[in-house]
Amino acid sequence: MFSGKSEELIRRVRRALIARHRVRVFKSHLDARYEGIYRVSSHTGVAVDAVPIDRSEEILRAIGEPENVDVVAVDETQFLDAGILDVATHLADQGVRVILAGTDTDFRGEPFGLMGPLMAIAEEVTKLQAICVVCGDLASRNQRLVDGKPAPWNMPVVLVGGSESYEARCRRCFQISRLDEDQVALL
Image 1: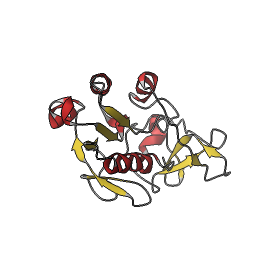
Image 2: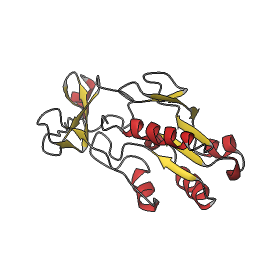
Image 3: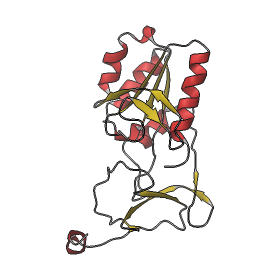
């Protein structure tokens, strides 16, 4: 988070539109932050229209035949189901440029959703890093906070939020709280 993933996706979409490519933009329906569910928005306020989806197969239904589109861009890909692997592969095999943006690790520092396998099959991977809010180094972790403290390990993985819930941290400054169930119930 806070590394500019959505902003980079929007930049690439805008360049494709300038080149007069036929572009379709999608995003997980879970992300309704900033400008709402029908826009991909960055933390800085840059935005582009998007179609919210619940399942990855909706991408194929929305575009119809692959020859109807040149570029498919998807934001918050980490929230999508396992079918995104097949959808991305199918589109790429048909000559469609596929741009996927997402967070590669969850708040525990573990691979998030299908991002690892998607990076493995991609022709190109651009890994952006934020700046650690604690020490100023490059950040590779998403520190989830609960009342200003590191979130317990056993909290649900998916919690859509911004600076009110997360901080960018480097590996050294990243912390995870391993509270037991009784302690979590008190939160």
